[in-house]
Figure 1 (tube, one colour):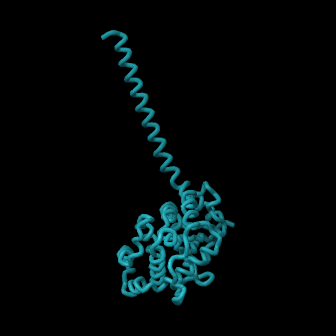
Figure 2 (cartoon, helix red, strand yellow):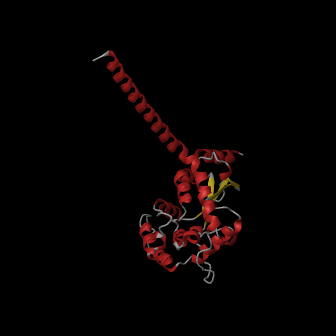
Length: 258
């Protein structure tokens, strides 16, 4: 083989090796961005999706004619708040959510373990407010029915685990699976002690539908731009695009020292 041919093959191998190394480095950077940026970007993504939903969503259905029955333990103005955590916790996280909202699921996935840790430790309490803007935007009643079922779970003292199960099993936004009571009751079996005749009747009768409608009306009048809306001690954490679960935890810990 001539020196020229050998040199040509060596150059080709070197180019191929360089290209493979380049591709490997690019893939490594891409994975790092996905893993490292997911939590930081989830708030911005949630805000964008939530704004779109809020701008086009309208009150779904009319339950105003039915009596407003608040779930057990509800607090706040018109008993529209579902509280989680110790009442005297030094920090308060206020969360407006819609069980059909993909951005809400993204927030819950990223922050759930941190929220549980902070509420369990007594450093923070959470005030949940339920909205139904996706029903108005996409059509259907899944947001309302899921919120009613969550309120029924609150009656049974099982709001937090059922709330988490709903988000862990959230269907695609265009799939109104939560409109089916059978789906909501099936998911209740994932929560120990929740699947009872009382709970099933509460879900099937839509016991808290009017309460859910009133909660959604409160959201529409609030001036908030979308779901999830998350406030820590009254300040919207979406204003900080660098917010992460670790940063939220540090803020809560710092507030407890004051």
